[in-house]
Image 1 (cartoon, rainbow, N blue to C red):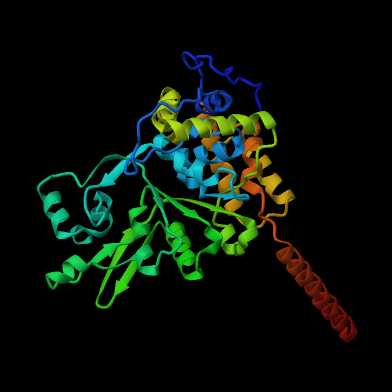
Image 2: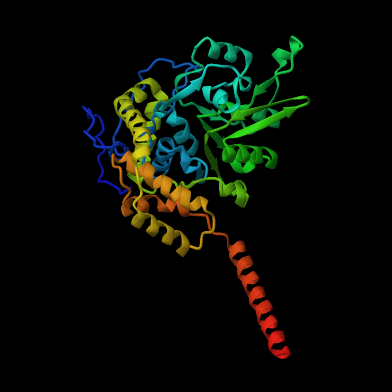
Amino acid sequence: MEDHPDQSIPEGENSGSPPRVRSLKELIEVVTGRGTQSSTDGGDSGIAEPLPFPFLAVVGQVEMKLALILGLVNPNIGGILLIGPRGTGKTTAVRSLLDLLPEVKKSTCFYGCLPEDIEHGGIDAVCPDCARKYGEGQPLSVPGRVQLVELPLNSTMEDVVGGLDERALVHERLRLKRGILSQSDRNILYVDEVNLLSDEIIDAILDASALGSYTVRRGPISATYWARFTLIGSMNPEEGRLRPQIMDRFGLRVLVRGLADPDERLEAYRRVQSYLGNPHGTIASFEEETGIAREEIQLARQKLNSVVIPNEVAQIGISLIQSLQIDSLRADITLFEAARAYTAADGRERVEIEDIKKVAPVALRLRRSQFIEEYLSAQKLEEEEILTRMNELSSDRV
């Protein structure tokens, strides 16, 4: 996404109506430079009500915001990893997605039963209550907003995958309760400091993410849960590196740096000051643009199925990946799915070369392995030596 001239509003000046925009992509670009009026005349917001910092109030960091929006538009991108030092707004940006999240079909059941469970596994695939509802023609799901589910760093394996339901045990019944992975189905699972998680937990998350479901076994009972979530992780590379197989599961990789422009840093301070003094007022100042962005995300999700990639554009993408010597096929999937999401967000139905160009850095960076390159090179030399020796032995016997 290209930088635009400074469009911030002079301090103390009323912004009036938001500028008219043609697409979600353009909306983010325009609002990025918008100013806010500082105010400390606000009531106590309390601690129970979630009041995330407005996503569109985040100054700069266009690549990070673009990657997060693309993940909302197209979950098939395969997750997003934010990499950068402390204090650069990674967690703030993720939590600020709350007001932009689109609607999906949500289960009305404590155990997460959905109509597709019955379609795939029959009536026994849902709990007795949902089986009764289904027989009576009652809906098992209702429209609901996608939720942001955060994985605490101190989570246990049982917290993540689920365990025996203590409420059922009181009545001498064996029943499993859902874990965080099941609660994340059709939602966003955010893992802060993902590089500090135990191998056991990260493996469970990655397996569920890859399959879209997982099975829990506790003694004589077992249950399979849906786990079709968008995975967002953040990390500070100073605190440790990710295993290659974990890194490969994240589709988009964003390098989050500190703001280099002094004016942007000052504007960021002013917005934080305004938010801390009056969170309701700061949120309200971006309410109209946030509503437009939320509607545009929903429209882009609906439009996504009609977006196509012409063969000549796809071939250029494949050539780019091969020229970079990237072996993982996930690179192809991420590049093309991100380009489709970018196209849908721009209100178009045909991916162009420029769309590939826009998303290529976040889709393809950090995918090459020096170790694998050296390993395969050594194996190629060994194979050539084997063939040479074989040819020599064959010629000696002729």
